[in-house]
Every structure is written in structure tokens, then in C-alpha cells.
Amino acid sequence: MPSRSDAEVVHLVAARRTGAISHVSYARPILELAATWRASRLAWTIDGEHEELGEGIVVVGNMRAYGVGLNPAAEAEHDDGLLDAVFIPARTAVDLLAWAPLLRLGLAHRLPDWIVPHGGGHRMRRGARIELTSDPASRLQLDGDPSALPASAGSPDPAVRRRFWVEPGALRVLLPG
Image 1 (cartoon, rainbow, N blue to C red):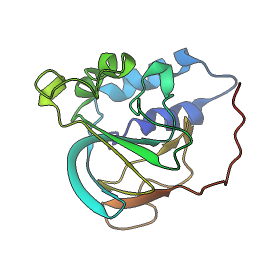
Image 2: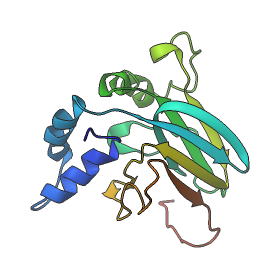
Image 3: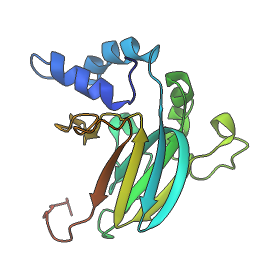
Image 4: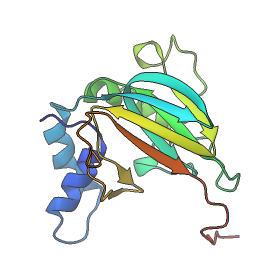
């Protein structure tokens, strides 16, 4: 079965891990999955407002930091009590790769659709409650670690819904001054 999510890379790295990992640890799984990766059709409902997104990936976070300096949620505020959801349209790994320089430079949110890969379609939303629907189901990664939830979450339905929300005050984080 083809890979359905970039989280597949995280799951492969974790399954093969024998010690410490580095950025190089991700190279082989990325190359293995690049030819077969196919995006799921996605939709989100953010604070009650539903939107069909199309094929691609969604990153949900509340900080600007993401792997190797790719910061899809470049405008996220860690202390605003909201999550940032970013949709990146891509059907294949090559499509996704085209977004990398824009994400690295923080330009994905600032450029008009006619400049960005594949005519745009990139979306960024902020909210307290986010529900994602993925069809077919895809795996999750949570801050670089594989999610223990199966891709299908035990459902015979090919689509799966995942919910994310903010619990104010649930985690105390110390930041350098």
C-alpha cells in the first residue's frame, strides 16, 4: 500500500531505530517513500467552520518550529491559546518538495497564489478546536514521534477523523529569558 502521509517517514525511522537518530536517519525512509507517497484528501473543521481542502498534508501546531527549519506555522504564537493549522496542497512527494524553500524562508504565507507551487491552495487557519478528516486514513506524527494511534483508528471507514484542541494551563513550559 502506498504511503499516505509524511508521518510514514517518522514511523519508519522509529521502527528501524537502534540508537540515537540524526537528520541522516531520515534520508533512507524519505527516499524509499518518495516514489509511492500519495496524499490523502483532507478537510478540516476549525471552531465549527468546515472547509474541504483537497489533497495534501496538514500541520497542526502552536509554535513556529518544525523539522529542519521548515516552519509551516510561521505565524504561530505559543501563548495565544490557539492552534495553527496549515494545509499544504500536494499530490506527490515532488509536489511537496516544491514547498520546502518557501517554508524554510517563511514565504509560503506571504506570496500570491500565482507564484507558489501548483497555483497555491495553501491555507492557514487558527482556532481552539480543530477536526481533521483524512480519506484514506493516514498516520500521525506528534512532534517528531510516531503516534500510537493506528492510521484507521480501528474504523472500517476509509476516512478517519482526528480532533485537536487546546487545554489552557495543562502544560507549563519554561522558555529562556
